[in-house]
Length: 500
Image (cartoon, rainbow, N blue to C red; front, side):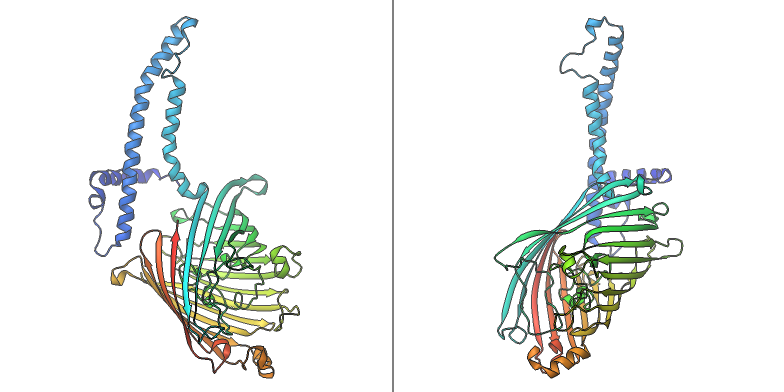
């Protein structure tokens, strides 16, 4: 945590005094409509400040009380004969005083940890129960599935590297575990209506954990910290086993299946994920490197960045071979900023090429290339809208274009400021190559595919507490897999999420 500037300290002392004297209402008059959750957090923070101040005062009084005997002992020792110089065993001498001073200094450590300068651990557990009718299942009968997934992430700042221009070095580790599969659908372009499941190849009888990510990042600051202590302009180099979507195709509204949309076409660009153009390992991760330049643009109210990534694909994604024909992806992004320096929106354009992807039959190696857009934008206090576009420009797949769009709306309008409702729609277009192949050989999927598969998803995220959320979810799919005769079907689910 950056120390408070000296010109802010009188105001801060006055605020703390007001808080200590009369709580939140004595320090600031909350305007009508203030989020109760924010007031509750402020009250907790004030209680913590008061407790720390009280404890600090008690320890300082103990230190002052002990300094007088210690000083007298030191004076007596200087004038006493050598035989009298030794302090009695267990007496209140300098070692005991030094230990107490260390205890006083330790009070600041929790605040230092919050600054990101010490190890941080985050985790969560997500469970999904989902049901699909016989019109949408692969067996023609109703299907229900229950699954869970857990994630633990550790971030460890490792200081600076003088040999590399005083670059800041940060390590990151991600452990993932889970059990249970999702419902099995009739042929669709949608990879899955539930992106949460994680299990071993042997199925639901086995649960285990993997090291999903393990990477290090070097960051060269090109100036001081930005506004509100946010990172300033910088160059970043990331190396290791990485979740590609943590650095490319990001989206604040549609990018987290643990809190937002469940259908895979809304979580990431469908061409990259459902379409397989990243060719990552079985769990969606790959070894690689990313180089990025970030300009926060504080003097003009908007920032921009450029990044380039090279990742193992195919057998190289699971360390089976070297990265002979890697996935190469580049991204440009533009971010309008709020007055506090945080982004109010993000506009990203990216392009990729991958030499380890395959043809329609999945047998011969064939290079796939394409481009995409990912946009999210806040509108007012409650609206947060998004849109994505993806198009394959080289290579064959079941679909070659995808458009998704939607929004999330906060719950203040109905008195639930920490809740949110989301709605998204998507169109995934059958490619000409797949349409021709299925027309010539209907045994491939049982029909001649053409046109757009259409998907709609809605959810309501109900926040029960700071750490617990429940989210009912409803999905509707039309023309599954580009089959004009396929019946529409629904997928109904309930997601529970616990985070810390």
